[in-house]
Image: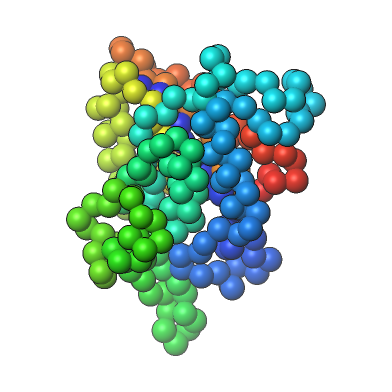
Length: 241
């Protein structure tokens, strides 16, 4: 199996100069929407739409020039990931499948200040999902109350969640399949640590930019091959964030 780990495109929280102005479930910025569109075209065609200093314009990245051949797209239920998945699903002719465990460390929460403190929010509801993202495959746990049931997820819980996702992916490893998951920066680090068998306390961090692509191949003998991390060939320099 080939696993493409994709970080969502730039969100409004990513672009904030002051993190105290963050919202609990941000949407994409205009720049982020453009990142997602270029990412989608690239995944579908294997081509870039802008000049690159290291190779001629518009040359294929994939060996056959027909795109990555992705067969399934899984996404976090956070709006920035759902919005990133939309043009990808359209370009690939696939229905994005919501995998709740792909959400960012912390969950859907907001610090309301000293009088109220940190409070969890439900996230997108089923009716909102059907109105904003028709055709997505949603689990039963996503209801009219949303999908997030907690307050602020501690790191230990996020590490355990990453281990669950990694175990599922290992079980799929022998399949002759190419899948993409659209997730988040911090969770992607936890997932890569879990896939590579690193101790949870290992101080290793993977810097993944918005709309970046990383590839992990699962071999038939249970070995993993990290082919590349943080690929951004599909974005011009002024869209890298």
